[in-house]
Every structure is written in structure tokens, then in C-alpha cells.
Length: 300
Image (cartoon, rainbow, N blue to C red; front, side, top):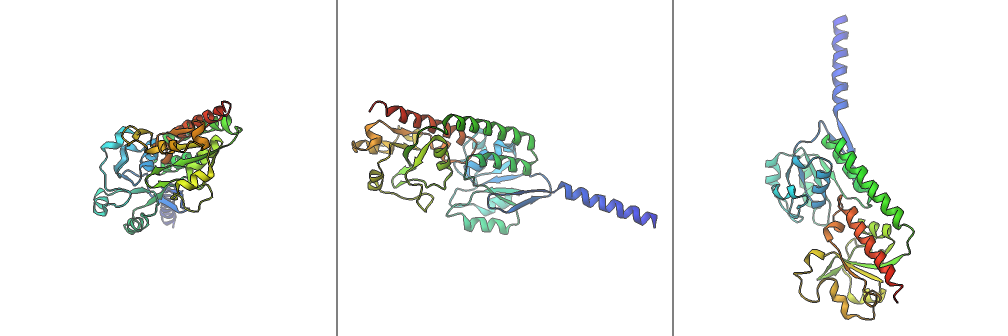
């Protein structure tokens, strides 16, 4: 009897130990992701996701990623298994990942369903607010077992964010238009994380109420709204764009407030369109330009 009790006790201890070793977090879709041990082989299916995993301390564990995952520099040497339109499922299987970090967009749902069918744990990442970027890093760090690195990275981001809030939260509002691309002309609505950066800086998105996240808009619609400042996320492409492209297309509309006051700004779109750690730096650059737009009011 004593031996049986001892054996039962040891079994319960073993089960308890295994339960304690289980890692569980909730992703941005509200689903629970559970791993039996820290992930060692990770596939990242969006550029911002790659940056998040690196920030969390798991860059060396990424075995596959997608096109445009080019930051940090080490990400450029990771094998690419597709892009935001099509993933090579056979290559994903061959990589034997124990965690796939995904981003859900319009054309990705079918592929994500196929990935779920493989039985590989998926963590869905889509921060809608700037402070959720730090939350993503913490949760990914937990799945990787790199909590210490993730906590340090998250704390640094939150410190930067707090500084920006303190500096700009009481500044006068600036009505602005953010141009993602000019051919076709489209922008972002109030649900996109970039609009959270705008609000942080005192910017008011003139198309915040649009129902589509990235709606096509007309030049006439922008002219009617008459924003005080216009931003383009193609700073790195300005030199290669033909004349009249990018934010310069608005220069012909001389009566528009943004044009009259010299408030046509180009920023690095990677810092503002990717919901990764660098977006806090992108928000800082946006805040600086909006402050410049406020200074231009004094000249008028």
C-alpha cells in the first residue's frame, strides 16, 4: 500500500511538473496559444512579425520568413518561403517549425486555415495601438522562453512612448491626410495603428471614419477635406519616383492649406506601416513634422 501511494505521489508530481512547463498566451485574435516547451524553430509571416521576434530575443530561432522582412540586417539572410499573397506550404512543412507567427490580412485567411490544418501552433499578431506593440513582444518572449530580453525591450518602448505622450498630448490638433500610395491613391482609417500614432501626436485623420482599413480615396475627396498637413510614407523612394509622384502630386493644388503652408511631408513608410518596435520611432518623426506644421501657422 505504501509503495502504491509513493508511486501515485510521484506520478502526480510528474504531471504537475509537466503542467507547470506548459506555456500559454492569448494572441491578438483572442485565441489561446499553448506550447509544451519554448519554441525553437519559428516561421514569421509578416515583416513586422519578424521585427517583433527579433526584439523579443528570438531572431536566431527564425527558420523561415516572407519577402520584405529586411530588418534588422540579420533578417535578410533568413530563407524566404513566400510573400503576403502566397506561402509555399511544402517549404513550411520542411522547416518543421514549432511556432508560426502570422498576420491576418485580406488574402491570408485561406492560407492561415491551411496552416492551422498542419497542427502547428499559430500566434496571430496585429497591434491596433502603439502600446500593444510592447504587449506583443512580451507574449512572443514568453512563447520563446526569452522573457528577460522581451521585458527589457518592452520597457524601453514604453518609456519612449510615455515621453512622446508627455510631450505632445496637449498640443493643438492638426487635420492631416496620410497617403500610403498615390497610384492608386489610398489611405488608412481610424482603426489602423497608424491613426493611434496620429492621435498621440495631436494629428486628426481626415478619413478616420472610413469603414475600410485601407480605403481608396479620390483627389477630389482630399481637396474637399482640405487638410492642414499631408504625409506620404515613401521617403525612401522619393529619388526614384518620377516627377509629380509621391507627396509632390499635391503641389499643383496651390489653394490647399497643406500646400500654402508648406506642409507636405515624406516619412519612412516602414517605420509607420509596420506594427513593430521601430514604429515608436516613426511616431516620433510624425510628431516632429506635425509640430513643424503648427509653427507654420505663425507665418500665415
